[in-house]
Image (cartoon, rainbow, N blue to C red; front, side, top):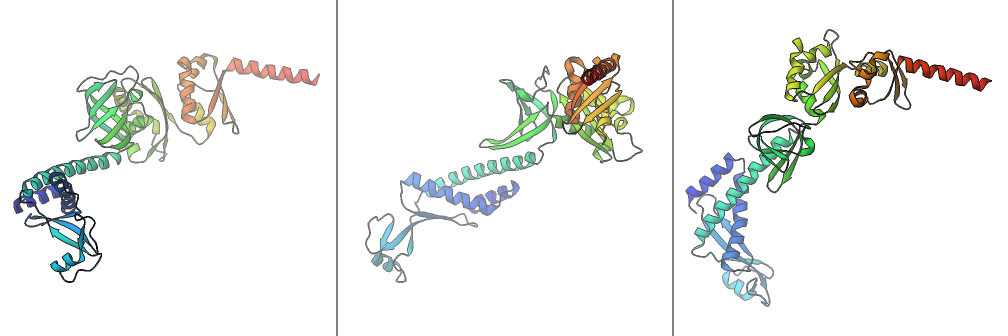
Amino acid sequence: MNAEFMQAFEQLGREKGIAPEVLFDAIEAALISAYKRNFGSAQNVRVSLDRSTGEIHVYARKNVVDEVNDARLELSLSEAKAIDPRYELEDIVELEVTPKNFGRIAAQTAKQVVVQRIREAERGMIYEEFSNRESDIVTGIVQRIEQKNVYIDLGKAEAILAPSEQIPDEVYKHNDRLKTYIVEVKKTTKGPQILVSRTHPGLLKRLFELEVPEIHDGVVELKSVAREPGLRSKIAVYSRDETVDPVGACVGHKGMRVQTIVNELKGEKIDIVKWNTDPAKYIANALSPARVISVEIQETEKMSRVVVPDYQLSLAIGKEGQNARLAAKLTGWKIDIKSESQAAQAAKLSVDSAQEELV
């Protein structure tokens, strides 16, 4: 290898973010393997690569011993002293064994090592970049669909949207532009594996952070998210500034902000409710759009009993219990909903039962 060849390696290493010394050490290690493979040698060898000229020298390393059992690995004391009188027992003597045609093999090996190291370095940089973006949103283009997995091109890397992370009934087509949430980034032998989601509650949270400046600036805080992907979601918001309405900020002028997010999620309905330190008020807000008459809290069981007007019962419970289920998930409280007449009847039965016990 000539000096120009070495300079090219060094420059390429710098451009790709690999320290030149790391590159040269890797080339030397690879040349040892190449020497043993091509010349059938079982000797202990060391390869020296001159960093400026590109000259390569191969040295056989032999232990100085009294009696030689293996000439490939050992050298007698008399032979060692013939080379240099200063050698003693157990010293290591290095004898040059550089083959005449080793330069061509060395150049080819070095090129392979450099290409491999650059590929590894690029994979490492991509891994670092995307592992730092876990729990963040990325925008990509659908490349292909294989065995129900959707592969998304993120530019420098490819992400996998698994069937379990896809919104039910959402159709993905080639070249579709898609926002996804990075769930996990794994290191593999083929490079970083980026797993993304369209169903994760974090996707909804990050979409609001991107769309609502007040959330991004920290004036409005998104306290909790509950999702049934593709169908309906609820978010609880709180304002640190009394002059800012957190719900209004998220809805936006004429509903523009929330509508942008609804469109991104292909029509998923989103309820935005006001968070409150008082569990009773928070639960009442969470059951929106239903109107609540009263909320009774049982702290020890983390249970609440909610009374709503008769005509609001089906709205409070929601289709197949969806509204109540999302409210419970949002607040972290169990919610038992009764209509006004059901609550009155239950109270009457309780009074009648108490009177019977007295009698």
